[in-house]
Length: 158
Ligand SMILES: Cc1cc2nc3c(=O)[nH]c(=O)nc-3n(C[C@H](O)[C@H](O)[C@H](O)COP(=O)(O)O)c2cc1C
Image: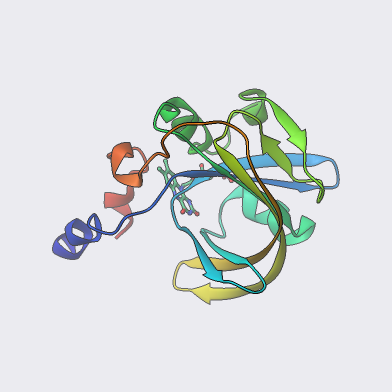
């Protein structure tokens, strides 16, 4: 499995903060497994571990924003990659998108999404989201997952 895990590092991914909202509660988590999967309608697939707190809110609230991190935002990737921390949303400036999902104003760009459907995928859930609105907010170079090194401790998950 170690061999496969090493070769998987050749796949390229960005790094995003996916933010969710449900009944006045908000949360956000760092995600690398995000990709466009349809042109019309525009759909994004987010692969999420169903044990994440964000998943509970996503499942009930059915909205999220996908916020693109820049290379300069490593500390944000690390912060939102942690679970169970107090006042997680106190980092960053947040504004509600049309769907009600929080948008990270410091991100390069965001996609405001409503959940379309879900597909089970091994130990993750693929949440397929329709993009209702998207905006570029800042200028910079997007972060690559490889830049985050061992931040997600993924070596232990295979
Ligand atoms: C760089 C990086 C990429 C990550 N990518 C994903 C991902 O694509 N899907 C996922 O479910 N978790 C991913 N994680 C893990 C979650 O961000 C992490 O478990 C987080 O603590 C979940 O937060 P929550 O429990 O508050 O929802 C990633 C973490 C890091 C640091």
